[in-house]
Image 1 (tube, rainbow over the protein chains, first blue to last red):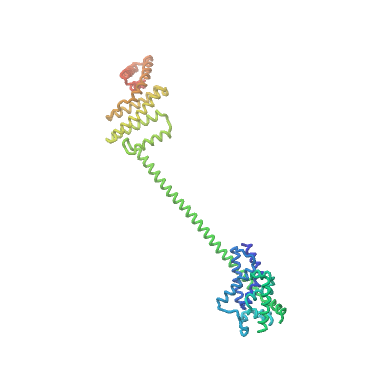
Image 2: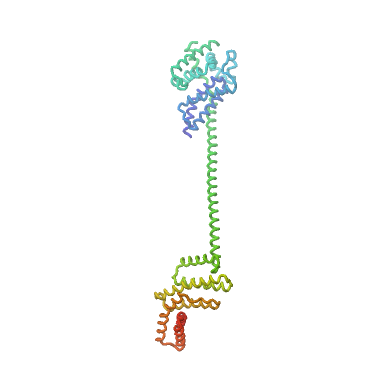
Length: 167
Length: 255
């Protein structure tokens, strides 16, 4: 029990920021991101408690997080497609001022644009550039060949750039 | 914005971080929740344990109950058996449970030991007492059975006594005492109007006793006797001559 707790405690420390960010960039709400992220880790801990074999904790947590975000949108009947006109409303009103201050206008533009990307492109870009995840590992999580991931990454960046330019 | 600038901007999204207090709080909540769950699980397990223990206790109770039932059954059986055996002791020949009484007596005889002659004589005495009781209580239907039992027991006693005489296991006085008991019983029955006629066994005893009595008479004749003893000796001789060897032997006892 203590060993499992210690293991999961390490995983929590390692992934809490990543998962939170992953969720936040999809839901664009601090409150919702915190809520979903806490549920993700709670579920992950539950799986650990049940002695389920988890070979890749990161992939496992991202999978839970992705599913929970989907569930969140399903439940709320919300769409993650945000039009350029509604960008100001899309910014989380609950986001703290510090976050807002940290993010420069360019970064904020990227953040908003990220939400318009296809889910797969979002995930690949976030994992590879934000979490410094190697292509091979992303490929493993996505269950796709590394070459496909490279192509998707390239296309994702291009699409993101286009969105930013359009906005 | 070129690709490099875009990637730089993307990487700056790393600055998005959860609140530290939320991170710590969430972590504690997760583990606390799990601890509560663990406690609940432990409680459930404990309850299950106690439930199992209780079931175990109930099983023991159940077993004990069964054992109690068994004990009650055994006790009842024992009471019944003791009751039957106890009641059987008051039976007389011809009664339903008289065979139980005989079995009990035989068991007691085996357990207490004792020689065959003594046991047979005791048995004979008991059967005589049974017959006396049957007569006194006027149990007409039991009289034939009681007489038969007396005859059977007497045969056993006489046979044992005959064996003792022929094997010289007893001296003349001891034999005379036992013979006297037989005769006393016989007389007791005669006073009640019951005559146990001579059997083959009694005749055999007489045959065995005859030389013994004769030998004793000869010894007494050679001995110096008082006048009173001379009279007694004459009476013994008369009994011997009339074939009443047992009575003659009784007379010898008076010397």
